[in-house]
Length: 427
Ligand SMILES: Cc1cc2nc3c(=O)[nH]c(=O)nc-3n(C[C@H](O)[C@H](O)[C@H](O)COP(=O)(O)OP(=O)(O)OC[C@H]3O[C@@H](n4cnc5c(N)ncnc54)[C@H](O)[C@@H]3O)c2cc1C
Image 1 (cartoon, helix red, strand yellow):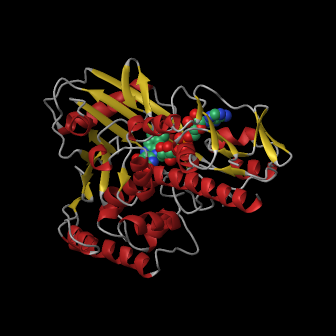
Image 2 (cartoon, rainbow, N blue to C red; image 1 turned 90 degrees about the vertical axis):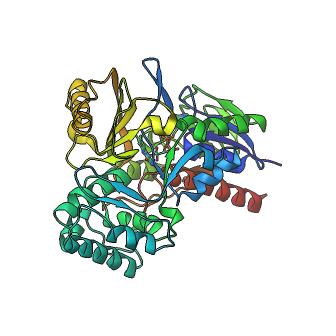
Image 3 (cartoon, rainbow, N blue to C red; image 1 turned 30 degrees about the vertical axis):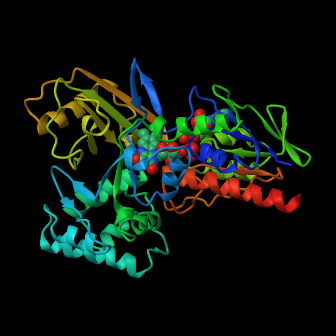
Protein backbone atom coordinates (compact mmCIF):
# COMPACT_ATOMS: atom_id res chain seq x y z
CA UNK A 1 0.00 0.00 0.00
CA UNK A 2 1.31 3.44 -0.89
CA UNK A 3 1.59 5.88 2.03
CA UNK A 4 -0.52 9.03 1.96
CA UNK A 5 2.07 11.80 2.16
CA UNK A 6 1.39 15.50 2.74
CA UNK A 7 4.04 17.92 1.52
CA UNK A 8 3.75 21.34 3.10
CA UNK A 9 5.48 23.97 0.96
CA UNK A 10 6.21 23.87 -2.77
CA UNK A 11 9.54 25.65 -2.92
CA UNK A 12 12.41 23.81 -4.59
CA UNK A 13 12.82 21.53 -1.53
CA UNK A 14 9.17 20.49 -1.30
CA UNK A 15 8.95 19.97 -5.05
CA UNK A 16 12.12 17.86 -5.08
CA UNK A 17 10.60 15.73 -2.29
CA UNK A 18 7.35 15.43 -4.24
CA UNK A 19 9.03 14.45 -7.52
CA UNK A 20 11.20 11.86 -5.70
CA UNK A 21 8.13 10.39 -3.97
CA UNK A 22 5.72 10.55 -6.89
CA UNK A 23 5.92 6.89 -7.90
CA UNK A 24 5.84 5.62 -4.33
CA UNK A 25 3.19 7.63 -2.50
CA UNK A 26 -0.26 9.16 -2.73
CA UNK A 27 0.80 12.78 -2.70
CA UNK A 28 -0.93 15.93 -1.54
CA UNK A 29 1.04 19.17 -1.84
CA UNK A 30 -0.03 22.32 0.01
CA UNK A 31 1.46 25.64 -1.12
CA UNK A 32 0.65 28.90 0.66
CA UNK A 33 1.56 31.09 -2.31
CA UNK A 34 -0.44 31.55 -5.47
CA UNK A 35 2.22 29.67 -7.40
CA UNK A 36 4.91 27.14 -6.47
CA UNK A 37 8.58 28.15 -6.30
CA UNK A 38 8.97 29.85 -2.91
CA UNK A 39 12.06 32.01 -2.76
CA UNK A 40 13.07 31.18 -6.35
CA UNK A 41 10.13 32.02 -8.56
CA UNK A 42 8.68 34.56 -10.96
CA UNK A 43 6.63 37.37 -9.42
CA UNK A 44 4.33 40.05 -10.73
CA UNK A 45 5.82 43.48 -10.09
CA UNK A 46 3.36 46.21 -11.05
CA UNK A 47 2.38 44.32 -14.17
CA UNK A 48 5.92 43.20 -15.08
CA UNK A 49 6.95 39.57 -14.64
CA UNK A 50 10.35 39.38 -13.00
CA UNK A 51 12.21 36.88 -10.86
CA UNK A 52 11.97 37.51 -7.13
CA UNK A 53 15.77 37.74 -7.25
CA UNK A 54 18.50 37.04 -9.77
CA UNK A 55 19.76 33.50 -9.15
CA UNK A 56 23.01 31.85 -10.25
CA UNK A 57 23.64 28.14 -10.26
CA UNK A 58 26.96 26.40 -10.78
CA UNK A 59 27.87 23.19 -12.55
CA UNK A 60 28.27 21.48 -9.16
CA UNK A 61 24.50 21.71 -8.60
CA UNK A 62 24.06 18.25 -10.07
CA UNK A 63 20.89 17.38 -8.13
CA UNK A 64 19.12 20.56 -9.26
CA UNK A 65 20.03 19.70 -12.83
CA UNK A 66 18.87 16.09 -12.40
CA UNK A 67 15.52 17.23 -10.96
CA UNK A 68 15.04 19.66 -13.83
CA UNK A 69 15.72 16.90 -16.37
CA UNK A 70 13.31 14.58 -14.52
CA UNK A 71 10.44 17.02 -15.10
CA UNK A 72 11.36 17.73 -18.71
CA UNK A 73 13.58 20.82 -18.51
CA UNK A 74 16.77 20.69 -20.60
CA UNK A 75 19.57 22.48 -18.70
CA UNK A 76 21.46 23.02 -21.97
CA UNK A 77 18.57 25.23 -23.15
CA UNK A 78 17.65 26.68 -19.77
CA UNK A 79 21.07 28.16 -18.90
CA UNK A 80 23.82 30.23 -20.35
CA UNK A 81 26.82 28.19 -19.26
CA UNK A 82 30.03 30.17 -18.75
CA UNK A 83 33.43 28.96 -17.63
CA UNK A 84 34.23 30.39 -14.20
CA UNK A 85 34.48 34.11 -14.83
CA UNK A 86 35.15 36.98 -12.47
CA UNK A 87 34.61 40.43 -13.97
CA UNK A 88 34.84 43.26 -11.44
CA UNK A 89 34.86 46.61 -13.24
CA UNK A 90 36.85 48.22 -10.47
CA UNK A 91 38.90 45.17 -9.46
CA UNK A 92 39.89 41.65 -10.42
CA UNK A 93 39.13 40.30 -13.89
CA UNK A 94 39.65 36.60 -14.39
CA UNK A 95 38.39 33.96 -16.81
CA UNK A 96 39.22 30.31 -16.27
CA UNK A 97 40.01 28.54 -19.55
CA UNK A 98 38.17 25.34 -20.51
CA UNK A 99 40.94 23.07 -19.22
CA UNK A 100 40.76 20.15 -16.78
CA UNK A 101 40.87 20.99 -13.06
CA UNK A 102 42.94 22.30 -11.40
CA UNK A 103 44.60 23.89 -14.45
CA UNK A 104 41.53 25.99 -15.22
CA UNK A 105 41.88 27.78 -11.87
CA UNK A 106 45.68 27.90 -11.95
CA UNK A 107 45.80 29.46 -15.43
CA UNK A 108 42.82 31.69 -14.71
CA UNK A 109 44.61 33.03 -11.66
CA UNK A 110 47.88 33.42 -13.51
CA UNK A 111 46.22 35.51 -16.20
CA UNK A 112 44.01 37.48 -13.79
CA UNK A 113 44.08 41.26 -14.18
CA UNK A 114 43.80 43.71 -11.31
CA UNK A 115 46.06 41.69 -8.99
CA UNK A 116 49.78 42.08 -8.37
CA UNK A 117 52.01 38.97 -8.56
CA UNK A 118 52.31 39.10 -4.75
CA UNK A 119 48.52 39.06 -4.40
CA UNK A 120 48.18 36.18 -6.87
CA UNK A 121 50.71 34.21 -4.85
CA UNK A 122 48.93 34.93 -1.57
CA UNK A 123 45.56 33.93 -3.06
CA UNK A 124 47.04 30.71 -4.49
CA UNK A 125 48.63 29.91 -1.10
CA UNK A 126 45.36 30.43 0.76
CA UNK A 127 43.44 28.19 -1.66
CA UNK A 128 46.19 25.57 -1.57
CA UNK A 129 46.15 25.65 2.26
CA UNK A 130 42.43 24.88 2.27
CA UNK A 131 42.87 22.15 -0.32
CA UNK A 132 45.68 20.48 1.65
CA UNK A 133 43.46 20.51 4.73
CA UNK A 134 40.84 18.58 2.71
CA UNK A 135 38.73 21.75 2.56
CA UNK A 136 38.10 21.38 6.32
CA UNK A 137 38.44 24.27 8.76
CA UNK A 138 38.63 23.35 12.41
CA UNK A 139 38.03 25.13 14.63
CA UNK A 140 35.76 27.25 12.50
CA UNK A 141 36.25 31.03 12.60
CA UNK A 142 34.80 34.11 10.90
CA UNK A 143 35.97 34.58 7.31
CA UNK A 144 37.28 38.06 8.28
CA UNK A 145 39.69 36.40 10.75
CA UNK A 146 40.77 33.75 8.26
CA UNK A 147 41.44 36.45 5.64
CA UNK A 148 43.59 38.35 8.12
CA UNK A 149 45.50 35.23 9.19
CA UNK A 150 46.19 34.22 5.58
CA UNK A 151 47.23 37.70 4.50
CA UNK A 152 44.35 38.29 2.06
CA UNK A 153 43.93 42.03 2.69
CA UNK A 154 43.54 44.90 0.19
CA UNK A 155 42.31 44.10 -3.33
CA UNK A 156 42.07 40.40 -2.52
CA UNK A 157 39.45 41.02 0.14
CA UNK A 158 37.67 43.94 -1.54
CA UNK A 159 37.38 42.58 -5.01
CA UNK A 160 37.52 38.81 -4.58
CA UNK A 161 36.67 37.42 -1.16
CA UNK A 162 34.05 39.94 -0.12
CA UNK A 163 31.94 39.71 -3.30
CA UNK A 164 32.39 35.93 -3.31
CA UNK A 165 31.28 35.46 0.31
CA UNK A 166 28.39 37.91 -0.03
CA UNK A 167 27.05 36.28 -3.17
CA UNK A 168 27.66 32.65 -2.17
CA UNK A 169 26.78 32.91 1.52
CA UNK A 170 24.75 36.12 1.88
CA UNK A 171 26.54 36.76 5.16
CA UNK A 172 28.92 39.59 6.14
CA UNK A 173 32.60 38.60 6.42
CA UNK A 174 32.87 39.20 10.16
CA UNK A 175 30.12 36.63 10.82
CA UNK A 176 30.46 34.23 7.89
CA UNK A 177 31.76 30.72 8.61
CA UNK A 178 35.12 29.84 7.04
CA UNK A 179 34.19 26.13 7.20
CA UNK A 180 31.11 26.83 5.06
CA UNK A 181 33.15 28.94 2.66
CA UNK A 182 35.67 26.08 2.35
CA UNK A 183 32.87 23.70 1.39
CA UNK A 184 31.61 26.09 -1.27
CA UNK A 185 35.16 26.33 -2.64
CA UNK A 186 35.62 22.55 -2.53
CA UNK A 187 32.48 22.04 -4.63
CA UNK A 188 33.43 24.68 -7.17
CA UNK A 189 37.17 25.42 -7.43
CA UNK A 190 38.25 22.15 -5.83
CA UNK A 191 36.19 19.93 -8.08
CA UNK A 192 36.01 19.32 -11.84
CA UNK A 193 36.17 22.19 -14.33
CA UNK A 194 32.51 21.70 -15.19
CA UNK A 195 31.54 21.99 -11.50
CA UNK A 196 32.87 25.55 -11.41
CA UNK A 197 30.96 26.66 -14.53
CA UNK A 198 28.45 29.43 -13.92
CA UNK A 199 24.89 28.66 -14.99
CA UNK A 200 22.83 31.79 -15.62
CA UNK A 201 19.11 31.16 -16.18
CA UNK A 202 17.79 31.99 -19.65
CA UNK A 203 14.19 31.44 -18.59
CA UNK A 204 12.31 32.70 -15.58
CA UNK A 205 12.82 30.91 -12.28
CA UNK A 206 9.31 29.47 -12.22
CA UNK A 207 9.83 27.75 -15.58
CA UNK A 208 13.28 26.53 -14.54
CA UNK A 209 11.79 23.91 -12.22
CA UNK A 210 8.73 24.83 -10.08
CA UNK A 211 6.04 25.02 -12.79
CA UNK A 212 7.32 22.07 -14.87
CA UNK A 213 7.47 20.06 -11.61
CA UNK A 214 3.93 21.17 -10.72
CA UNK A 215 2.61 20.08 -14.12
CA UNK A 216 4.57 16.82 -13.96
CA UNK A 217 3.10 16.04 -10.53
CA UNK A 218 -0.43 16.88 -11.70
CA UNK A 219 -0.05 14.45 -14.61
CA UNK A 220 0.88 11.73 -12.12
CA UNK A 221 -2.21 12.25 -10.03
CA UNK A 222 -0.78 14.26 -7.13
CA UNK A 223 -3.32 16.51 -5.42
CA UNK A 224 -1.93 20.02 -5.65
CA UNK A 225 -3.27 22.98 -3.67
CA UNK A 226 -2.07 26.53 -4.36
CA UNK A 227 -2.99 29.45 -2.12
CA UNK A 228 -3.42 26.99 0.72
CA UNK A 229 -1.49 27.84 3.92
CA UNK A 230 -1.37 24.92 6.34
CA UNK A 231 -2.27 26.04 9.88
CA UNK A 232 -1.68 22.90 11.91
CA UNK A 233 0.33 19.70 11.90
CA UNK A 234 -0.46 17.27 14.71
CA UNK A 235 0.76 13.78 15.56
CA UNK A 236 -2.09 11.26 15.27
CA UNK A 237 -1.19 7.76 16.44
CA UNK A 238 1.19 6.31 13.84
CA UNK A 239 0.14 9.02 11.38
CA UNK A 240 -0.30 12.76 11.25
CA UNK A 241 -3.09 15.28 10.80
CA UNK A 242 -2.51 18.25 8.52
CA UNK A 243 -5.22 20.87 9.06
CA UNK A 244 -7.29 18.02 10.48
CA UNK A 245 -6.85 15.68 7.46
CA UNK A 246 -5.30 12.29 8.08
CA UNK A 247 -2.03 11.30 6.39
CA UNK A 248 0.53 8.58 6.97
CA UNK A 249 3.49 10.93 6.63
CA UNK A 250 4.41 14.58 6.27
CA UNK A 251 7.32 16.48 4.74
CA UNK A 252 7.37 20.02 6.12
CA UNK A 253 9.24 22.01 3.46
CA UNK A 254 8.51 25.58 4.58
CA UNK A 255 11.24 28.13 5.33
CA UNK A 256 12.33 27.92 8.98
CA UNK A 257 10.33 30.96 10.12
CA UNK A 258 7.17 29.47 8.59
CA UNK A 259 7.89 25.94 9.82
CA UNK A 260 8.51 27.01 13.43
CA UNK A 261 4.90 27.89 14.42
CA UNK A 262 3.71 24.53 13.05
CA UNK A 263 6.08 22.58 15.29
CA UNK A 264 4.40 22.93 18.70
CA UNK A 265 4.82 19.14 19.14
CA UNK A 266 8.64 19.43 18.74
CA UNK A 267 9.85 22.23 21.07
CA UNK A 268 13.53 21.27 20.63
CA UNK A 269 13.23 21.90 16.91
CA UNK A 270 11.41 25.18 17.57
CA UNK A 271 14.27 26.35 19.80
CA UNK A 272 16.86 25.33 17.22
CA UNK A 273 15.02 27.27 14.53
CA UNK A 274 14.77 30.33 16.77
CA UNK A 275 18.58 30.40 16.93
CA UNK A 276 18.86 30.98 13.16
CA UNK A 277 19.55 34.47 11.86
CA UNK A 278 18.54 35.78 8.44
CA UNK A 279 19.92 38.22 5.91
CA UNK A 280 18.05 40.21 3.25
CA UNK A 281 18.82 40.34 -0.47
CA UNK A 282 17.77 43.37 -2.51
CA UNK A 283 17.28 43.03 -6.26
CA UNK A 284 16.84 46.15 -8.35
CA UNK A 285 15.39 45.86 -11.85
CA UNK A 286 16.02 48.75 -14.22
CA UNK A 287 14.78 49.02 -17.79
CA UNK A 288 16.55 51.36 -20.21
CA UNK A 289 15.71 52.68 -23.67
CA UNK A 290 18.65 50.74 -25.10
CA UNK A 291 20.86 47.84 -24.05
CA UNK A 292 23.33 49.11 -21.43
CA UNK A 293 27.00 48.68 -22.34
CA UNK A 294 28.24 46.57 -19.46
CA UNK A 295 31.63 44.84 -19.62
CA UNK A 296 30.11 41.37 -19.18
CA UNK A 297 26.75 39.66 -18.85
CA UNK A 298 27.54 39.38 -15.13
CA UNK A 299 29.57 42.33 -13.91
CA UNK A 300 30.83 42.88 -10.38
CA UNK A 301 31.26 46.19 -8.61
CA UNK A 302 33.63 46.30 -5.65
CA UNK A 303 32.81 49.90 -4.80
CA UNK A 304 29.17 50.19 -5.83
CA UNK A 305 25.81 50.03 -4.10
CA UNK A 306 25.07 46.90 -6.16
CA UNK A 307 27.44 43.98 -5.89
CA UNK A 308 26.58 42.37 -9.24
CA UNK A 309 24.85 43.56 -12.39
CA UNK A 310 23.22 41.14 -14.82
CA UNK A 311 22.38 42.11 -18.38
CA UNK A 312 19.00 40.42 -18.70
CA UNK A 313 18.69 41.03 -22.44
CA UNK A 314 21.63 38.70 -23.10
CA UNK A 315 20.14 36.10 -20.76
CA UNK A 316 16.38 36.10 -21.02
CA UNK A 317 15.80 38.45 -23.94
CA UNK A 318 14.42 41.25 -21.72
CA UNK A 319 16.05 43.97 -23.84
CA UNK A 320 17.41 46.95 -21.94
CA UNK A 321 16.79 45.30 -18.55
CA UNK A 322 19.44 45.07 -15.83
CA UNK A 323 19.11 43.13 -12.58
CA UNK A 324 21.30 44.51 -9.80
CA UNK A 325 21.90 42.39 -6.72
CA UNK A 326 22.75 43.65 -3.25
CA UNK A 327 23.48 40.78 -0.87
CA UNK A 328 23.52 40.77 2.94
CA UNK A 329 21.69 44.09 2.71
CA UNK A 330 20.74 44.48 6.39
CA UNK A 331 22.48 47.87 6.43
CA UNK A 332 19.86 49.15 3.96
CA UNK A 333 16.70 48.37 5.93
CA UNK A 334 16.16 52.01 6.88
CA UNK A 335 16.91 53.38 3.41
CA UNK A 336 14.02 54.77 1.37
CA UNK A 337 13.45 52.66 -1.75
CA UNK A 338 14.01 55.65 -4.04
CA UNK A 339 17.47 56.21 -2.57
CA UNK A 340 18.48 52.60 -3.28
CA UNK A 341 17.12 52.83 -6.85
CA UNK A 342 18.99 56.11 -7.46
CA UNK A 343 22.28 54.73 -6.15
CA UNK A 344 22.07 51.64 -8.33
CA UNK A 345 21.15 53.75 -11.39
CA UNK A 346 24.22 55.88 -10.62
CA UNK A 347 26.39 52.71 -10.50
CA UNK A 348 25.19 51.81 -14.00
CA UNK A 349 25.55 55.38 -15.30
CA UNK A 350 29.23 55.31 -14.31
CA UNK A 351 29.74 52.29 -16.58
CA UNK A 352 27.70 53.67 -19.48
CA UNK A 353 27.54 57.48 -19.15
CA UNK A 354 25.40 58.10 -22.27
CA UNK A 355 22.73 55.59 -21.28
CA UNK A 356 20.34 58.09 -19.72
CA UNK A 357 17.98 57.49 -16.82
CA UNK A 358 16.09 54.18 -16.57
CA UNK A 359 12.57 54.21 -18.02
CA UNK A 360 11.38 51.95 -15.25
CA UNK A 361 12.93 50.69 -12.05
CA UNK A 362 11.71 48.58 -9.15
CA UNK A 363 13.18 47.15 -5.98
CA UNK A 364 12.40 43.62 -4.76
CA UNK A 365 13.25 43.20 -1.09
CA UNK A 366 13.49 39.66 0.26
CA UNK A 367 13.85 40.48 3.97
CA UNK A 368 14.65 36.94 5.08
CA UNK A 369 16.18 35.80 1.81
CA UNK A 370 18.47 33.23 3.41
CA UNK A 371 19.71 32.21 6.82
CA UNK A 372 23.06 33.71 7.75
CA UNK A 373 25.82 31.10 7.29
CA UNK A 374 27.53 32.04 10.53
CA UNK A 375 30.23 30.33 12.56
CA UNK A 376 27.90 29.32 15.38
CA UNK A 377 25.07 27.89 13.26
CA UNK A 378 23.38 25.05 15.06
CA UNK A 379 23.16 21.63 13.45
CA UNK A 380 19.56 20.72 12.70
CA UNK A 381 18.05 17.29 12.34
CA UNK A 382 15.63 16.77 9.49
CA UNK A 383 13.71 14.08 11.42
CA UNK A 384 10.76 15.48 13.35
CA UNK A 385 10.28 14.32 16.93
CA UNK A 386 6.78 13.13 17.77
CA UNK A 387 5.65 12.09 14.27
CA UNK A 388 6.67 8.63 13.13
CA UNK A 389 6.94 9.55 9.46
CA UNK A 390 7.70 13.24 9.74
CA UNK A 391 10.57 15.04 8.02
CA UNK A 392 11.75 18.56 7.40
CA UNK A 393 13.11 19.74 4.06
CA UNK A 394 14.62 23.07 3.10
CA UNK A 395 17.83 24.90 2.27
CA UNK A 396 18.48 25.45 5.99
CA UNK A 397 19.01 21.81 6.96
CA UNK A 398 22.53 21.11 5.71
CA UNK A 399 24.78 22.27 8.55
CA UNK A 400 27.82 22.86 6.37
CA UNK A 401 26.32 24.58 3.36
CA UNK A 402 24.89 28.06 2.73
CA UNK A 403 21.31 28.54 1.53
CA UNK A 404 21.25 27.39 -2.08
CA UNK A 405 18.87 25.80 -4.55
CA UNK A 406 21.10 22.73 -4.50
CA UNK A 407 20.86 22.49 -0.71
CA UNK A 408 17.07 22.84 -0.95
CA UNK A 409 16.74 20.15 -3.63
CA UNK A 410 19.10 17.73 -1.85
CA UNK A 411 17.20 18.12 1.42
CA UNK A 412 13.90 17.36 -0.34
CA UNK A 413 15.35 14.26 -1.99
CA UNK A 414 16.88 13.14 1.32
CA UNK A 415 13.58 13.54 3.20
CA UNK A 416 11.73 11.57 0.51
CA UNK A 417 14.29 8.74 0.51
CA UNK A 418 14.42 8.50 4.31
CA UNK A 419 10.64 8.40 4.47
CA UNK A 420 10.39 5.63 1.87
CA UNK A 421 13.12 3.56 3.50
CA UNK A 422 11.47 3.76 6.88
CA UNK A 423 8.01 3.12 5.49
CA UNK A 424 9.20 0.03 3.59
CA UNK A 425 11.02 -1.28 6.68
CA UNK A 426 7.99 -0.90 8.94
CA UNK A 427 5.33 -2.36 6.61
C1 LIG B 1 16.78 37.12 -3.67
C2 LIG B 1 17.36 35.75 -3.55
C3 LIG B 1 18.47 35.39 -4.30
C4 LIG B 1 19.02 34.11 -4.19
N1 LIG B 1 20.06 33.76 -4.99
C5 LIG B 1 20.47 32.48 -5.02
C6 LIG B 1 21.42 32.04 -5.98
O1 LIG B 1 21.93 32.82 -6.78
N2 LIG B 1 21.77 30.73 -5.99
C7 LIG B 1 21.21 29.80 -5.13
O2 LIG B 1 21.54 28.62 -5.21
N3 LIG B 1 20.32 30.21 -4.20
C8 LIG B 1 19.93 31.50 -4.12
N4 LIG B 1 18.98 31.90 -3.22
C9 LIG B 1 18.50 30.91 -2.23
C10 LIG B 1 17.42 30.00 -2.81
O3 LIG B 1 16.40 30.74 -3.46
C11 LIG B 1 16.80 29.23 -1.65
O4 LIG B 1 17.83 28.52 -1.00
C12 LIG B 1 15.74 28.25 -2.09
O5 LIG B 1 14.80 28.82 -2.96
C13 LIG B 1 15.02 27.74 -0.83
O6 LIG B 1 14.07 26.77 -1.21
P1 LIG B 1 13.22 26.03 -0.11
O7 LIG B 1 12.29 25.12 -0.84
O8 LIG B 1 14.11 25.45 0.92
O9 LIG B 1 12.39 27.15 0.66
P2 LIG B 1 11.29 28.18 0.11
O10 LIG B 1 11.64 28.62 -1.24
O11 LIG B 1 11.13 29.21 1.18
O12 LIG B 1 9.97 27.31 -0.01
C14 LIG B 1 9.07 27.12 1.03
C15 LIG B 1 7.67 27.12 0.48
O13 LIG B 1 6.77 26.81 1.53
C16 LIG B 1 5.62 27.60 1.41
N5 LIG B 1 4.99 27.66 2.74
C17 LIG B 1 5.46 28.27 3.86
N6 LIG B 1 4.63 28.05 4.90
C18 LIG B 1 3.61 27.29 4.42
C19 LIG B 1 2.43 26.73 5.00
N7 LIG B 1 2.14 26.93 6.29
N8 LIG B 1 1.60 26.03 4.22
C20 LIG B 1 1.87 25.80 2.90
N9 LIG B 1 2.99 26.32 2.29
C21 LIG B 1 3.84 27.03 3.05
C22 LIG B 1 6.15 28.94 0.91
O14 LIG B 1 5.14 29.70 0.31
C23 LIG B 1 7.23 28.47 -0.06
O15 LIG B 1 6.72 28.30 -1.36
C24 LIG B 1 18.44 33.18 -3.28
C25 LIG B 1 17.34 33.53 -2.52
C26 LIG B 1 16.79 34.79 -2.65
C27 LIG B 1 15.57 35.14 -1.83
